[in-house]
Length: 343
Image (tube, rainbow, N blue to C red; front, side, top):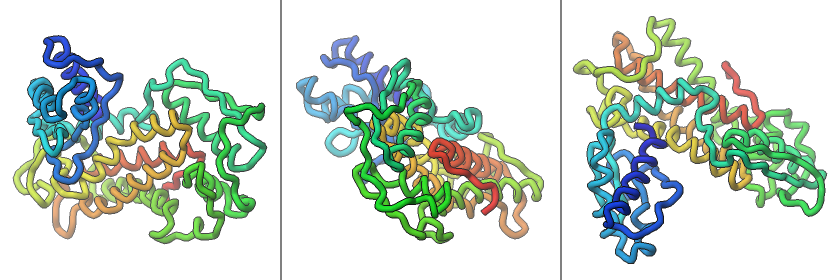
């Protein structure tokens, strides 16, 4: 079950509770699921009970207990636990991670596309300013990922006015200049400096592009060792990622690195929706940094070490790394920035 499917599962659970008279609320249009917070458990968590408590005239814990069996009835859900003031923590069946990775690899550059703005025309009226032009150009592509169409003009009144850059970013080169203008929130003044060109860990742009290059290098190295990516499958004894089994099975999600990377991939469609609906391309840039950091922490688990033979676990981990590279390439493309195969 993918995060999108799980969100629909939660919505269906709310609808069933309303239909049988257990809740008296309007069914929300959407429900967000994400990684569990501090004190949480399982694979994903949702605050839907807290959202519905007021309209239902009940406590969040009471709403959560009403929804828990309805969510748990879905065949893709292994268990539901209520924690804190009413958070619903959901543990999925073993194929959840594999389904997510397969979805990313199948959809390719279109992963994360949705219909949040389907049929809508978004008018972007910007001043004659370099940063405003770059932000608007990027939003045209991001809005399109959600089924909308952005039209850019310079008519008054202006409705998109990011803080201008203090100087011309062109000397940084096309990629670094765009990153310098897009990475900060529109309300923040961009920093135009040679730091954006440094090939160091302190440079977010370098980490994103380096992580993409590493995902491609892992694929080349795996091919040299005679194996390729494969999603899913059983884990032979001894093939588990250190830390044992767990809900992510062959992908090695029981290792913290695998969980963090999977969570970052799962949240990418939500980041795209927010960027499109809030006219905030910085949300995409910042999310790509999270994906890159997750991959760079996970990469050491992908290839066999020493005399170790390639296994089902290695093939599945390679699939996860390739999925991360796919998201990085797609996100950089939306920002108008190149994704090098070598770096």
